[in-house]
Length: 439
Ligand code: UGA
Image 1: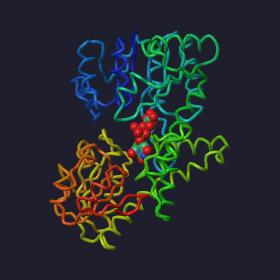
Image 2 (image 1 turned 120 degrees about the vertical axis):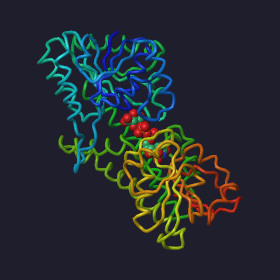
Image 3 (image 1 turned 180 degrees about the horizontal axis):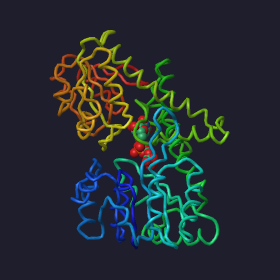
């Protein structure tokens, strides 16, 4: 099938290559010339395990192309909208201008029987409005909402082997036609028995925001427990293990630490609250404000803990920050808790050196005032404290004995509860973590 993908960021670039991998002819469209030419040269514009290989193999088949001109989407039967919906400046609501302009641009190439399939995360009600626009301008063209649940770091795997397919369809015969087209696009995934939820536009839009809100709530729940553990001397990691054994609760997303960041969870819970307010249902989501608050408090607590460990003052103290990306296996630094803490420490007078296996270049562009190092050893040279703020494998596997040679003071703060406390303590380090006793 001929497919277009509008927007070649994280979501769109991976989606385009994955659809080519499924056997379709795909044109990826983006307004950013540099991005398009990078992708066309089989180079990934971001760090994502497995994406480079997927891009090279699918480009080599001749089935995948990239362009800046939406006219190149002419002839595609299904058009996926994968553009960003960032938080508006100065307010909680999502900025829909990219989604709107993508759909408007598509009006020029759409034909009757074609399908626009939205994948971007949008406030509930957006799809119905856009469906009217599409059907009004190109009678017989349809719009579906088909949210995406991929995680950065697992984007290729999640796209090719999703745990569910959600189709938000128009009513009636158009809905049947749209469903048949999506089933054709995802044929191997459907054949693999992937659960499908076939529903209306509003439910499909809400599935996405509800899922991300639930994940954020789960993280903030365990981080609230960490605050209590800090007050009582209990251990949040053991607590999470113990409650996680109950499969109604589950252990996943119960890792206490510095909390959530990135381009999705923080802005999605805020946009959801803003939309609930517009719908007169704001009370239903006031708890998300607390989820957001708990999350932000963890960053403040981390800075306090660093000060405590540095004998009550950060002035002139050398602090190594291991990790800048918002999570491991990513170079994404959007709303990164690690960089946020690093910047706070520097503002309070510490001499901060940040390192990360993939995100230093991005960090340097956005936070040029911070000092960067290529390796953990370089960052920790003569350090008074080492903070592990993103749980990259390289940091989890550090040898505390050898690493102890480079620092001035063997003090480690485990911001992600990712290190083996006993090994570090045995190597002579003082160990501190959020929600756990000092070691
Ligand atoms: C999230 C969702 O998990 C995806 O399903 C969704 O498709 C995506 O947003 C999106 O909306 O596009 P992602 O932002 O890649 O994916 O990252 P997550 O793996 O969800 O992690 C988010 C943050 O939570 C990270 O900062 C991570 O360090 C933190 N986290 C995660 C915790 O603090 N504790 C945990 O137990 C798990």
